[in-house]
Amino acid sequence: MSSSGDAGGKPSSSASAIVADTSSEHHLLSIHDYSRTKGVPTGDFVSSLPFSLGGHRWRIDYYPNGINADVADYISLSLMLEEDAAAPVKAQFELSLVDGSEEYEVPTSVDTFVSRGGWSYTTFVKRVDLETSKHLRDDSFTIRCDIVVINKCHAKSAAFVSVPPCDLGRHLGNLLETEKGADVVFEVGGKTFAAHRCVLAARSSVFSAELFGPMKEGNTLGVVHIQDMEAKVFKALLHFVYTGSLLEMLEMLENTMQASIVFSILQERRHYYGIL
Image 1 (cartoon, rainbow, N blue to C red):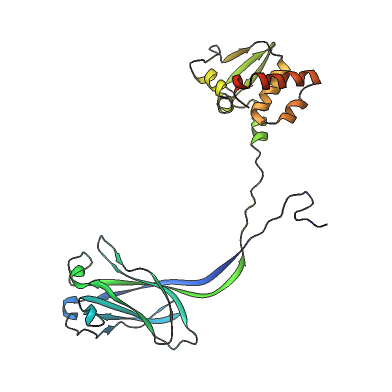
Image 2: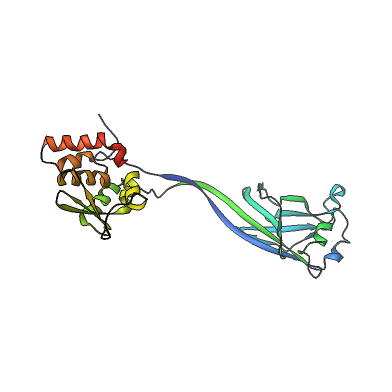
């Protein structure tokens, strides 16, 4: 019978991803002497010089009075594939106005371009809006064209982060054992135990009240006296508060009687200690 995982019983994990090869670039087209370009008839355009982005040649067609009579109050733009492509070119593209404190852009589009074909923004911007905006300066404005050419998709291995099991109980147990940073001392049965106020307060609402609230106990040296409890029992109980491990707590006790005492404490005083 087969099972997943290694010899230690831990499940094995892996990861992969499907990604698209892309190339992203942008081109800036400046329109100077804007007011003079308004003399171009509706439906006519002025083409930019060809430019290369994403491994292909493109051009932008500028229609100062719209691409047709229905949009004669707008500036229209067309993004054209200026080459004879061996295969259709899939691209994500965006045209926007730059300059000025405000930004104007049209929604990003994805299209497939064939040889000498293109895609048009018929209502790129209304002329009256452009003329009253901060984008038009000294009778000039700039158009930014962003193109992301989407090439073939393929599979690749992906980094997989294996999260180790939580060792918080062990780390807190080590903190208790080393007494590093301890700021409170309990005196039980003639023995003292150093501990950490914040840990105890986080694990027990009553410890929190005793150490930080109106019920605060302990002398100026931070010593809290515990009555009616054996030192070994309190040590085991303290270990449980830090680690949450009953098994380790029982292993610290020497006999069944001591274990019964601890269980009795946990059951009868659970409301007092507030840890169960």
